[in-house]
Length: 139
Image (tube, rainbow, N blue to C red; front, side, top):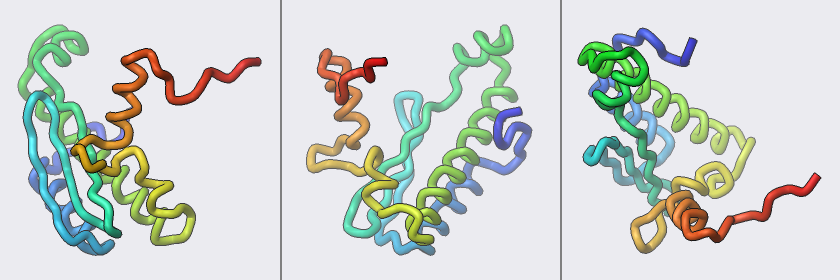
């Protein structure tokens, strides 16, 4: 069973929980947004701007998974994905706070660069251009 499957927590409440969490761990700025089939949370913390983006479920997603574009199932999946995002962010912040990881180590992929891209977006772009970040491991 996927994490948070069946949750009834509204997306807005989860977004507020993420905001409170970011503030608790020292975020200086916070925002959310959506568009083009995604939702994002962005905040400034420890001198870094970080952005987490999730894909939102679509009618096409629902048709592939359930055979029909059921709005209730789409809304349920959106709530579930937001709960997963909360868990991801909380885990990273707690790992840093607990000394398990350093901030840049834990957040590297979601740090926003000067051009407005996350490090992961830059790596993915390079891979799409045929420039792999790392060579494959040879057995």
